[in-house]
Length: 203
Image (cartoon, helix red, strand yellow):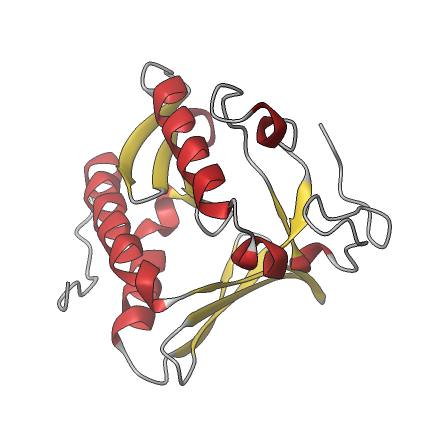
């Protein structure tokens, strides 16, 4: 499996060095029958900016999404709780958490079941409230969620003072993310027996 090395790892799209880890996203697997040449890029890193402009991004993300659904449909370690429009939410029993994987954005985050309601409130509120801005601690990471003037929602994740990840969820992904979060909240309720307080009006 390729490892990211700052100022050494090259983007699989533009072949230029990626300066920072938070500028990079890792390509998932796709089936070679879709494209043998694209399949060879699996697990390599790309600039997030290059990915957004890449002509093959939609083909790649769709193929990866379909393969993940097919492979994990009978996989006990990763149970699919939600799958729609390039986004899959897995239940990872061994970690007692949800793995959130957006194949269109190349974003993967883990949400412990104990944090599902709080995270749900933050994410849904960010997509519904203007000027939303919130910083909170989840595990060893400091999360900041901010909605900008264009209504895009920016996530930054720090480990101490080090920026670990940074990505933007544009308006065309908001509905999908909110629907997935509703499912996480519902499933989390069953798993821990709590009542969520999240507001899901507007979708």
